[in-house]
Length: 213
Length: 180
Image (tube, rainbow over all chains, first blue to last red; front, top):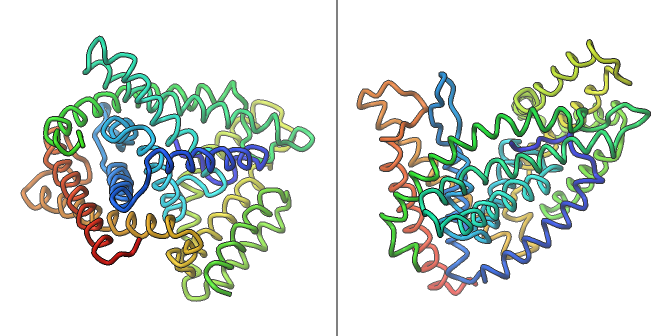
């Protein structure tokens, strides 16, 4: 879902950079980063980075990699997840070129912010009915909500940044982006939901004491 | 130039490339990165090319196919878009190759410490993951790089437990040295 370099216009990534910097400042204030929290946030970032390297078989012969957004958000809280995933996105852009440096701010808003907060929001909305269903929906929302935002931002580019009708950044409009981005992520969201349910339930039982601190 | 100045120059050039719509400028920047990298030029060129191939090729091919069926203003629009992406990606890899990012981020102690700790933990957890793959492969598992649901819990215990242990150890190290 990472948006690569060259697809996002400065009209989009500069305001997004200001917004994501403000949100990151808020996140570090909320987490209250002190001597004990810094290694922990770094550890959570590393964990989510490595979780994205784990590949799960997908019915039909292909495979998908874990995103782990909802797992991190449900285990450690939305603000910690947002701060940690932002760091992961920066490292992925710098070291592997996965998600560009110009699109980093949009990726942070989509994956780290919307992914983490939609997971915790949907979990809190549904946890009064059933905890398992709430975790499942949180995992699903953490993929689908960011994909809707990514589709919106990509489809916006031909409208706000073109020269005599010729696209300068991402070339397709909303009629294409909503189908090509959201539909595959709807199915990926279902897989992520199952993985989130099994991993969160398992880790919460196993590390009850540490996670309650 | 020191690390901090190089990092700021990189950011300025990336911003410049974002607002310039000239293929020649993009090609110029790509050639400049080749000149800067000297011995590693082909390695960085190959890495940047693979990134563009992997992440941008689908959109490029879709646009070419689309332009066959629908009249578009500029069928060659993707040339500039891909060249810009290639130039920015080459610059990013040049920065990572030539600049010590730990030093470049020293202007903010929190960024520097977070970057260092995250990098250290990633290296540790990645090697654990690799060892896990080697472990299951050496025991006769036919899966190559995939993990099935039965294999996931023990792997997660290892990763999660190591992360918690390492974080606590780093906190103690920071406290004992009075670094923060």
